[in-house]
Image (cartoon, rainbow, N blue to C red; front, side):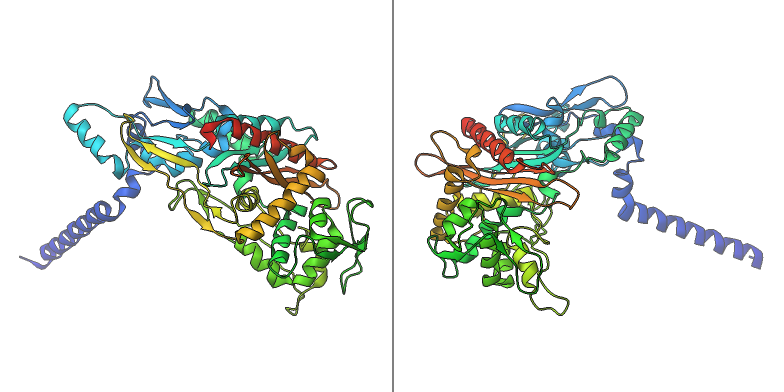
Length: 501
């Protein structure tokens, strides 16, 4: 063979080798990426060829699939519209999945390894079994009340959130963010329509796509005083101990005085810790926080769940809807020493302290549950397509114990006093023991204050039945009282609905 032919032969062999290597690379390493690509129309059609399982709560279907004509055989629908949007999320054709639709996608789609038996059965029967069903912990009644009360709040707030949990299990009874959105247009098979609907929501300055209950952090105001009170009870203070108070307090190194919301609040030189919580005494808690020290407060906040950045809400294992970390922020001078002025402000839930509504509900829940904080979860059960087999049933577990039972009992007494004698009266429920703490937090010098309430309800035997947090952003005067009223309505609904407990 002459030299030119040999060279051609070598080039051809090299090209065949490269082609063979590329095919193996695609089959071994890139197959999954191409199979699941949004640009793979064949996969998209196949995904909609199987009926997607339901998402349900209390026996009611919240997300279903109905048969249609066209290339995509089933259309995802959300009968509750905006009411459950931030829990369910949405299953779009050409956008990213969100919410429980994303978290439990494989099971709902029928492609989960747990459902391999159902798929094998289909091979022999010729049936086309749908996806599995996801049952949530939500109380339909509590969710309805939370949504309606937030939307129709009496102070004109446009943004806010509410979340309720069962303190003894961690099961989420209600989870609502305001404003919300209708997920149905986002699931449209008309991809132009779906994209337009998404873009409109994304550009809305009120942020309707935000899950504020889990991912929005705001200054908690006086609700943070419960954390400070817990630290005080563990460091030699009792609920009857007299602590410094007065109409005004100026921290060392600071020329800015801290005052109470009203001149009638703790004007005395000293008040008991019980009275300071009941009246929401800013000057008392500012001085108490400076006395306890920054590290003591930060550590107690961590024990309640502040700074945790890996908590998810879905099943009780790994995975679920992401949550933001609540933070106490810095209380230091540039040289690293404690800044008493920052510490004083932090002790009344201002400065750099930030909290999610979920964290607020977990604080209230752990106090109601003798100091035990249960891991929050949304998924109660996973059922087979034919509903005869359960592939997962939630088994509750403790997340942490922020305080000992005696400290929890003292905090309960103080929070009950807030509802019976203080600023949380609107949260009261006949026949139940309700405790709580209101909070008014400055948002910006030129904006109205946020209104907060965290609280719990106990039955006649002292058993916790619900814990809640409500925040109304930039609600202005009366915001915390309205948050307390809404919280009471949500807990009343959760109590009335056995499916939520």
